[in-house]
Amino acid sequence: MIMAMQKVKWWKYSGIFLIATGILHSVVGIAMGKDYLLGIIKDGFFNTVQDDNFSRGLAFWFLVCGIFFIILGQVLHYYIKKEQQPAPNILGYWLLVIGVMGCIIIPVSGFWLFIPQALIIIIANNKVKRIAEYEN
Image (cartoon, rainbow, N blue to C red; front, side):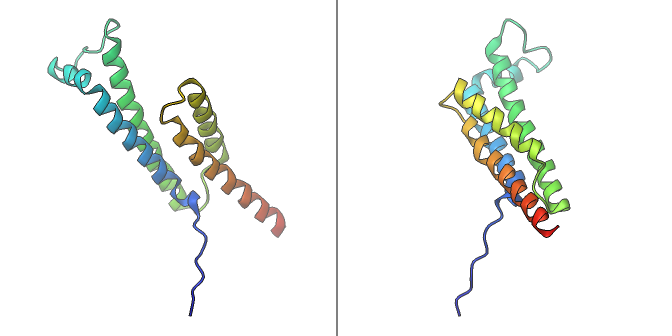
């Protein structure tokens, strides 16, 4: 007997995708900013990123952004598991805006990773909306 494969509901993995993006962002940040981050550690952390050291600040904020993506992904994953519905559409639209703007400003970057994640959320919400309208 041949079993039919169910369609994958990609929206259920939106949080995981964002966590993966955050991990990748953090790894790239550590790899590219290793010397600057080590300088922050070597100098004792406190007040080691000052106005005159743009590279240290850039490395630090690059890493912090990756950590924020991981945190947002964890919250999103929790929401999706609890509510059993896609992330709110507003998140999809914001990810799309950030992804498109980032790709325009820095074409060779990881900003393109936000675009499929955004589209997954937006398309899933549109399907849920159409199903709800059809049932009413």
